[in-house]
Image 1 (cartoon, rainbow, N blue to C red):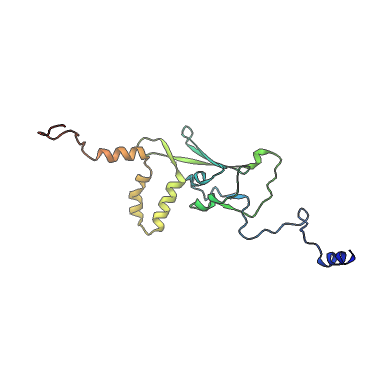
Image 2: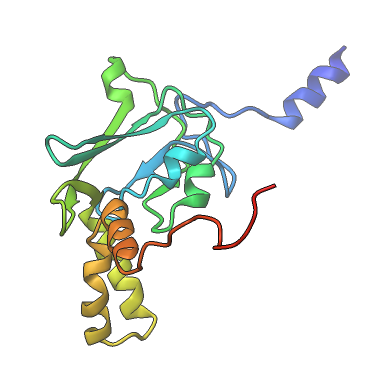
Length: 183
């Protein structure tokens, strides 16, 4: 028995004095999501990828806004949001202490202004997403004149684009050719 106590004394402490001393986490630890609304384009890819439905996005056409929201209480720290985000607006940090006094403190929200369609003047997409698309075109080497020519297409809603495309073609009459017999 005395030999066991000697061995224990030589070994020292094997646990971390966690609340009194900071806990070191491993590299790649998936902790609390950090969100940068300046980097976000409100594309909604993260909300689609989130298996726990911790991320939501609501579009309010009356006010012309889109509200992005993260509820950390539902987050399972899977990092799917980080994987699909095209602008790296959301990344998982190494922070794991998330205790709060009020449930409202577990919510992270951001509001984005919607762009109105050039034709029907209805809000349909965040202004930041159109600006991001234009920046990608510029980054790819496309000239400023070409980008300016494409901008109206990006600022037109899908329904109006569809109408414009269909109006360019003559209607085709469906029927049976003359002289054919119906069986």
